Image 1 (tube, one colour):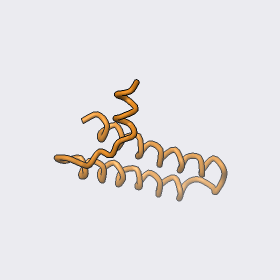
Image 2 (tube, one colour):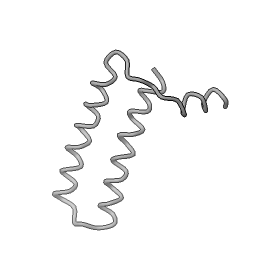
Image 3 (tube, one colour):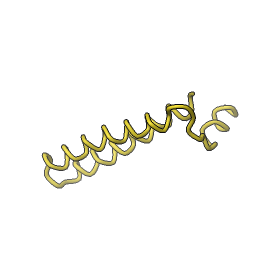
Image 4 (spheres, one colour):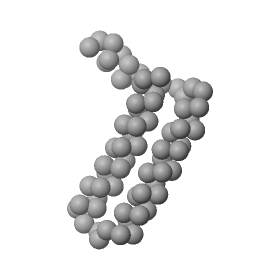
Length: 68
């Protein structure tokens, strides 16, 4: 557990092609966010969908940062 705590609560500067991959993930998810915004009525559900997209980007990028 101590190793996981150290890894999960440390700064991981981008290396190699990671910054480009982070950007690709953000851009693809942004396109989905625009689609949802245009197709879904303003609602709690839409807000939750947007929040979960933000979480998806965060966790996808964290998977790269923490595990490479």
